[in-house]
Each structure stands twice: as structure tokens, then as C-alpha cells.
Length: 89
Image 1 (cartoon, helix red, strand yellow):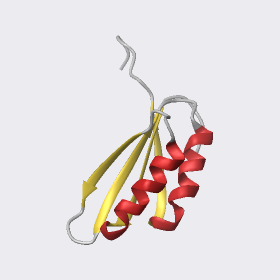
Image 2 (cartoon, one colour):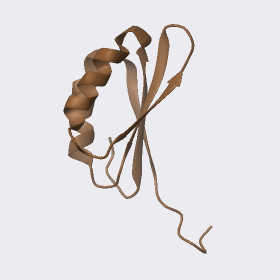
Image 3 (spheres, helix red, strand yellow):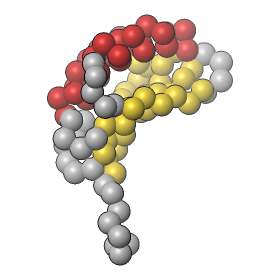
């Protein structure tokens, strides 16, 4: 994913039947690093997962992406968001 300022949000789809194995792969690759993992139930056979990374964690994102590659359908999509400072639009 692209580097830059702000938090990185990465989302992708996976089959619900692979969620337990994918979660184990995520946990092993993440270790104790502060990466959040969220889930949206798409109903039926699909889930959408989202990883949230603090700024300056590109090597960690690459490691987790490699660990999850066998479980993901399609592409990982990433977007960066920066904190909105007080008094700024």
C-alpha cells in the first residue's frame, strides 16, 4: 500500500468458512503490534474485513498482507486518512 501520513485503512473480502484460519494467520503476522481488525458480515458466504494501521507501519502491513493472501478473494483496497486538526476544514 502507499506510504504517507495518516492512518491506513485496508479492506477486502473473504469467504466466511475461511475466517478462523484467516484470523489465526492475521494474529500470527501481527504479533503484539497495535493493528485493529474489524468485520462486516455480508450475509451468507462472504465477510469484509478491515485492518486499521497507525501511521508509519508499512512493513507490518506488507507482512500481514502476505500472511492473508491465501484467504482473500480479489484485491486488498487501502485508503489513508489524516487527523483533522482543530480549526481546519
